Length: 343
Image (cartoon, rainbow, N blue to C red; front, side):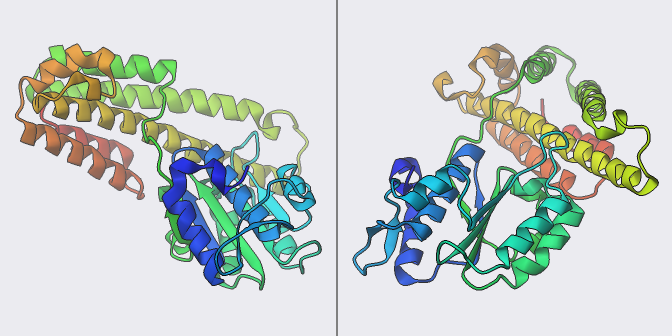
């Protein structure tokens, strides 16, 4: 696929194409958006454009899109181009490991063998642990000549600030409303029903806090059990001490990273429900609701509070999310956030 296959991202792609036309393509980019597959597709199209034998050219003669048919384009599509390198999180741990990052750094620092540019693409860059992020940082600070580094993330808030500050960030449009799994959907429905029909005031909010804390605890317990079962630690009892300690640290990091992602998704779903409450408080059309099936519960809450209070609920959840992205204590951050809600 080429840039032309992403019409919904025309504005961002035009920014890239203007940089290509002017010969001012950055050394390091962060592509962020809600659809990782789409981010990978655009990154792949950029890699093909930089290496294409028959590109579409702009007014100044510079390549601004790939032909999507020549040998380099086909090789990039099939993942076997010698100058285009990918790193993805490990299938089991869901972490970008430091060994993979070091391999990537070594490849990027070699001279191109098939084309003019080396392209390194890190899919799920927010899955880098501290070791892999720090290993990559020096390369990001001093990129090799004729190299382009592209980080892809659906959760850029988890990237180190030192990484973020060294990348040109391009945000891709897309619906931030992610589909809920069965457990999330059931929990949100129970939460909305309790908010709509339950006790009001301080006691009611503590009851809601209890349901949220219990659900998060259950998710983390299930996640821990799942990742521990998939870890080599459960399969090999004769590992050397150093290897075991390293794997234990990686497993711990993987559990924490995945739990934070699931927690963020759950709070995002709660924020969208509170948005529904706000819209109903404003007496907007129900066709605008993110969760129309919960309209009866949302409407009960909206009928009790003014639009101004409903809007402050959204601000409170946003602030809670920001606090949780730091090293703040989870229980305290959630308690403060939910106690601010007017329900």
